[in-house]
Length: 228
Image 1 (cartoon, rainbow, N blue to C red):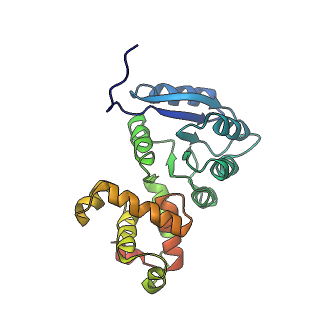
Image 2 (cartoon, one colour):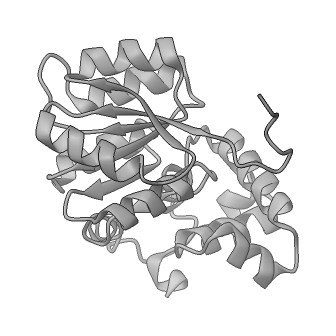
């Protein structure tokens, strides 16, 4: 058997956690049309998802919320607590605030609604495995809407924790800019952007861009008006 070329894309191993068989089969078929994507296991409930994730260590878990035995919120918490490198992408029918914030605080990298098409789901997976976050537009509106009451920013407090460039970069990330766009605008390499984001995550104890941005908004480090 010939070896793969050195520049061959890494296979992305995916675990599907979804209790509806027909939905799960449809998602699997859509994902495996993408070269390099492989669904390595399917979980019928949250408890199975946790066991399979810890055993198989997939790159990405596609996680539903409403599942028997253990819901997606608690399953996400348990997976991230034991294997923080596993990326959790929520795919659900629900955009309720009581689900959104616990999942983002549990370090889910993205939150999509089931009205997305297969191309949008594939794009989301490609985005989160690069360390970026993905939010369905309806979810993003609710996340940002939670912080509309913040009127005064307190960047001095941010400066006690982050460097000035890290603050600038976090603000850019908060607008939804990709790593490449941030790199182009700041005239730095994508690798440098990734390094800065990794440092930000460590300093804030965050697991994703979204979690870091929510932390900054809660602390009043910048306001939504500044991001317009």
